[in-house]
Image 1 (cartoon, rainbow, N blue to C red):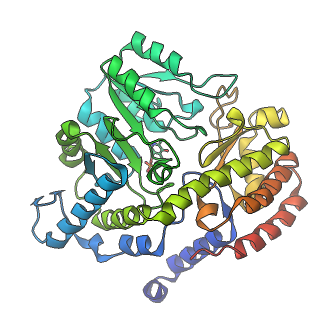
Image 2: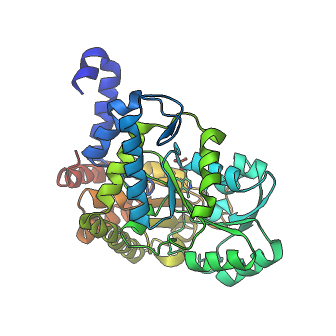
Image 3: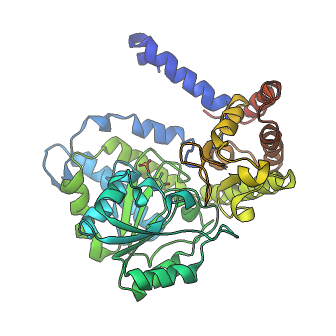
Length: 413
Ligand SMILES: *Cc1c(COP(=O)(O)O)cnc(C)c1O
């Protein structure tokens, strides 16, 4: 950071402050991760300087000799990592990737079966304020009230009744395994395209800690910056017969020049994800989440679906504290204690999305830092103390001191 230090102290100082925050707080947002120095270097490299509209060997600008090699390597690695027939590594992020899938494979107004937002779906899965809900006809399925789980028989019946063009699975706040094979079978039986948005769990899938949607699913979108631990960005993976439509939708359909520095960083991350250490990492994420869930439940914290199979835990504050709409207050109390989570709706939340009744948290970053089940016991103890005493300002300060000590033992960067 020598050059920013010399030329722009204002930004230099803020980057240092953020680095210090990442070092000294327990970052438990389940969609975040701490990527490697190698990934950071690729993302901050001179590949940033190049325009490369088009695809490898078919560019609209000269000078792409080395860029082509980088992009081809990224594509080959992603194909190998996930066992996919075709990959597009150019999507700028998860939302644009989903937009490209719908734009490439559907007509405006076509019917899509997707998960209700407050049950764990993403904004791009049909929210009324999002392009997806405005331009496509989303029909929603959700989880069961008693169990917090998906009922595949109900989803099958809904698909038979509605006959959608595309059936979407893969979520942003669902703590359990998703049966991608069954989603694909249902899609086939009603002549729909099967789509999986594996943004949250791509790293678990790469490491074998969650059922893979490959090779059977028609089209899969994913971010690269969540459990996969790469740069901010996304990819689309699909069967060969959808390849042309997907590529045309990404460019020239929606995007201009790809961010080749990010594509290089994606390639570095895919290489890391193919290593045995990453397999171990992905399984440890889940072991940690399960250990944390057990500890929380033993302290009378109620979880949606009573546990987790993934990296993610959803706390039901209504069942825990008998109060609605206090997710934000509890998230702020946790933040004061150095534990970063987010307020989230829970299925059938009687409150509004602005005052949700749940807390969403996860273990990808703590696991990247090297924490194991025994640390999850400690962290679970801190979290449950704060939740049960969320107005106690002194307690927040005391726990914050302990959080800093714990972070000191698990150095990042
Ligand atoms: C995070 C996420 C996205 C969107 O990714 P952005 O990079 O934030 O646009 C899409 N779908 C799901 C399921 C996600 O969890």
